[in-house]
Each structure stands twice: as structure tokens, then as C-alpha cells.
Length: 287
Image 1: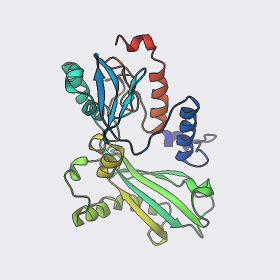
Image 2: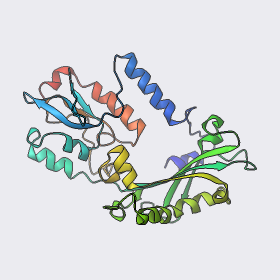
Image 3: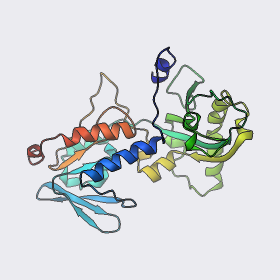
């Protein structure tokens, strides 16, 4: 839908100077300005519960961080359930949350290419649809070339490209595979071919121009982003289901992210976290 409107005259699709990292950096500045602290490489192992309320989190390395007001989880609905002691949430809530339908996952293609001789008006965003069944696997491909409008995102004479199949890559094709195996490498090559073909519609000799090639899979998403089955997000249909919002039955536990409000990625995390922060403190003791 976004791309459809983008093709109309007098429309613009804005992009932050510095790329998506610029938005993350702005969020971190806001966090620190309000007295917050960002901890990297600090995987949460579980939510601590004391006196019938979320009291903090335990990190995988054993540290505990106590909550003064609330614990807010930006993990997916399925991953959040794994962090909370089973007895701390009603059975009906657990069952309903676990039954939230997930979208499928991604295949990503990250490239660094030789940009010499390419059209200066290459454009940043492109979409390629091979068939009208939009949700079919290996069909809709989204492409971003951010260095086309922000040259600082790539070395001189180069372009940075991100192409992906969003929400239509079956996790079942990858489940149980050893990421170090020859089979895994072969499958990455096979499943990324659709992205190469999509890119060739925009840059016909892109394979010859490629200097850096990185391929991400559902297992990449699952490992690095701790996303249940590498999912793109919940498949909640407008008019049939409603997003649950930030509150949970466990006092002091709030949620944000794409499992609580429409949208995927940084926009959903930022907007939904604002909604979570607006929950009155008095309600946190009586949810």
C-alpha cells in the first residue's frame, strides 16, 4: 500500500539522514536524557515476580535489575511468555497469547556494490511483485538503496543495498538446520535467488557489481533478534482481531512492540512504548 501511494504524483517517502541507525541514536539520546541507561549484550533470562507483581529481570549472566515502577517487555508476545514464570499469568491469558497467529519470516540480502556508471536517479525504494498472490512465498520483494539519497551510508563510488522478502519465508524450511552446515549455506544461496532476480530488474548487472554479500534467514532473525520462529510479527487481521495494547494480567508488567499495536520494527517499538509509558502508575498496582 505504501509503495502504491508512493507512485502517485506529489507524494514523498521520507528517509532519515544517517539511515535507520539515526532513529535508534535519537531514541537512545531520549532515554539517557530521562535518566535511563542502555545495556548491550545483556540478554534477559526471566522476569522476576515478587508479591504478585513484576519486580525486575534476571539477566543470563546472573545479574538482577530491580524495577521501581514496572517491567516493560519489547519482546514478541510468544517470547515474553517464555520469560514470565508460568504460574504468574492466568492459564486463559497464556493460551490466548500463545495462540496469536504469527507471520512467516524473512530472507535478507545485504549488498555492497560498485556504483560506478549507474544512473544518478536510481531511487531509494523499489518493490517487485512476481505474482498477484502477495503473501505467497518467494513473491513480493522489497528493495532499499539508501545510499542513493544519502551517500554517507556507503564508501565513495559504492552503494549499500538491502533486499528482503518480508513476512513470506516459511520457517519450516529452516527449522532444525545447523547454521554451520554445508546444507544451510546451500539453502541460503537458493532462497536468496529471488532477491537477486528482483534486483536485476533495477540493476541488470548487480551480480557482477557485488563486492559484499550477506544473506540473512529466519534462523538469523531467531538468533540475533530473539524472535519466535524468526517471525516478522503477529498476523492480526484488521476487523477480525484487535491488538491487545500494553497491559497484562501480571501487575507491573507492560508490553510494547509489534505484538501490542499495528506496525513492525522501530516505528512500532517507539509508538507503542509511548502508549505503555502513558499507563497511569496507579493502574500498575491493580491490573
